[in-house]
Length: 526
Image 1 (cartoon, rainbow, N blue to C red):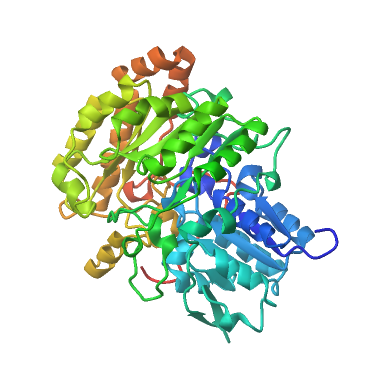
Image 2 (cartoon, one colour):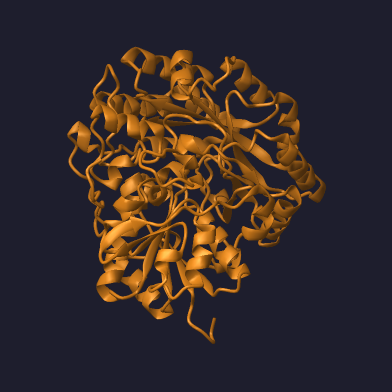
């Protein structure tokens, strides 16, 4: 890298203040940029010079970020726009647009590109911004390799899997394939952990989710997150995760068109866990959308972790209907102390509708009991405001949440996220969609959820926020936290629950964001 120009600088921009409001100061997680790490290692394995600038971890203001980029002088500046929740790729366009705009003002001739879920969902919209010259479609691995082999100018028309501007007019080239199952270990060969910034030891600028650390701020760092698989085999209406598997440029293509899952080999992944252990990391998120699904991959991986004796504190996702009770003891032994369960809604008919009928009839209470009896904690995920929801069915979901009284709960207002089937349903029906990227953020001031067939969007958002307040202020819940984790942890939860989100839709005045970036306005009507 000292002898030649840096080929590509991967940038993780910062949208945390707009996305999480006051929660961003102490309570939201700061995750390592997993896809920047994967792409960097993939390009490095092909001989390219790479670097990562994580503005979120370093909390870099715009001017400092532009200065740092200027000093590195990369051939290509690549904004990697995903997020802690894969559904937050649209939200994180806030920081990417703001930083790219500032960079273009300083260096108008430097080529910039975007890769990520929102760019895959709406590539022509992204190219509509003057600050972006290129988009990488789907996960962008092969397109990026071929782009870096080019002069980044005269031969763009022949590179598959990219969008670019010809005489100022945005257009898309033919699609490029995604990395196949048999090439995962080869073409996505791990994580470039050594490229991340740190204060005094590796990964100490990153902090785990508050609950993952048992509501103890001292256990939140160092922290790492990694995938052992990519994608999901389900086609839920509200989800856009699989849009990064897209290999079709036709309009209206959603995540439901590519429900593809691919896995790294257990042997390969065990080497990545060994690297984290050597770096002194114990707190780890398994970012897979469906870790608890394919025993051919998760069972040998977990048995390998048990054999190695690593003392990881981990959590993993599972749908409530894919939990396999006979593996829970293995999960616990390997260090998985939390399961994030996608309950979504209490009403079975609503769950079936939004999941295309893939949700099995399941006794949710028994599933929760099985998980807890094996010593695992649960963070249950709920969504308010599905298209068929009424105030009554949303209340059923809240009633179920309070009855289950799990150690943590996420509560989201339903959003028609770009790339999801629901996004195209909303457009076809003329439902009001956000006019800014911050409008797609669940916890932002500008959050604009969908209306249901029975409730306006404001009622959905109001119900969600009141449900959150009620859940975390209940004596039954706070007593549970104190019993399981301690009095100090209870006080930490109470401090979190006192933070009131401001909502434009509900008539609140805007929060004081100081010098924070402004929310980026969408370039096209949604």
